[in-house]
Length: 337
Image (cartoon, rainbow, N blue to C red; front, top):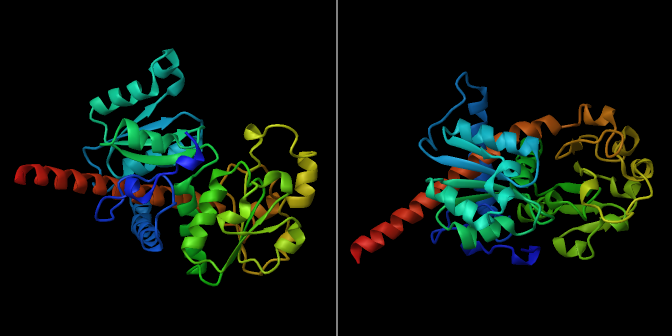
């Protein structure tokens, strides 16, 4: 399973263009991304109610399959599913049958036989959610919660929702993604989303050792000097230093990385005065970002967390709607035959 196996539009969408899986932003157009943002907007007020539930997934079963740990992402997916009134099963991979020798395919087929409706999948291998959607469980909606270095589409979309809330639109924006782009699935999805939604300029700022070879083909310009790269920015997105995915000595030290690429108040002052500061979390304070900036008036990091629930509610409800519509069309076609 590799990045090159990225799913095409027909795998993610029904024949009439509805979402049935959410695996990557590749192949999804601006209209659909905007529809996801608009749907998420409609769910934000649910979190402000005394009873934080809507019945859209009542009677449905959502299984969180996290083969890679992520407390924040799994928690927001679980909250999103419960706010949609779904039944939620969190599968502990460390104690599941897969750790006892059962294949991934057999585990998933058994879960499907229990009438599961949706799998939320996080996996260290790029392409794993695509493999599951195409080859293992075609009747179950698959949501990618992050795979390898490939994609993290819900994180990118919650970031886009946050930007739209604070900036109103994308067309005039200069946005920079800063830090460990090489190991970041988030960065790839963010760059894709920003370009599709019409951002005026997308930059990446990083040392050469933390950039993929084909970084410019992602749709961005490259700046190695953060002082220059911060000029006139409207949005700066700091990335977590992916130390667990690094192979070899790609950095002289965390202290040196912070000196050159960490966001502090002095560097932020080089950007537009209303520049917003973002970070997908978890934050390494004093490595990627100064506490005074992370907690400062230009930071929208906590807004990102709040918006994560709304975006995941939107994607889950839209994918389930697409699955149901496609199933009904197939049943109608068989009845006519």
